[in-house]
Length: 146
Ligand code: RTP
Ligand code: MG
Image (cartoon, rainbow, N blue to C red; front, side, top):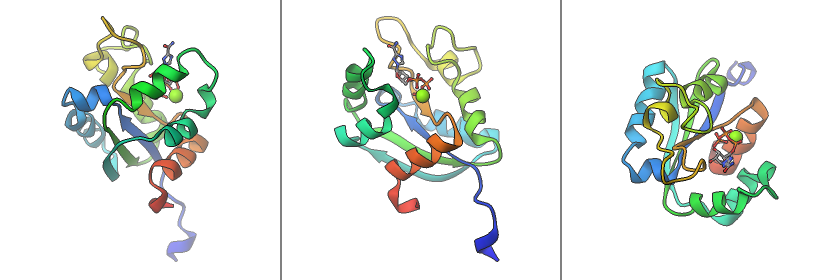
């Protein structure tokens, strides 16, 4: 029965406003699909303060929190639910280290991230960091997928 089948592993990916502005949405989707993951949802969204406060709750109070939320509202983001075995750590590997300077060549941030004249916050993509984060974040960005 369908109801007894385990739910496939899913992660939330965001192409941040810098990535959308630079026309890299398709490149990020291509890397996800080329790796063999399945796209379950893809939607261009304008994030609200409320959504970002919930999404970044773990970072509230840190010095980069307010500028990060402001940056994430500076333009649309492409919200993506990707699915596949190991997709949560797998997409983190595709994304690379948080700071594009440290991100290895071959990764999204390493190949495409620009860290000069900008800030660490502008690192092109977000990916959920655990199964708990993924469930929480997918519910926030795609409540209809519940
Ligand atoms: P993400 O959540 O976006 O996938 O990135 P991450 O796990 O690699 O990084 P995390 O520590 O969760 O931080 C979330 C986002 O906050 C910005 N950030 N700025 N020192 C700083 O200025 C700083 N540190 C983090 C980045 O946009 C990071 O992706
Ligand atoms: Mg994170």
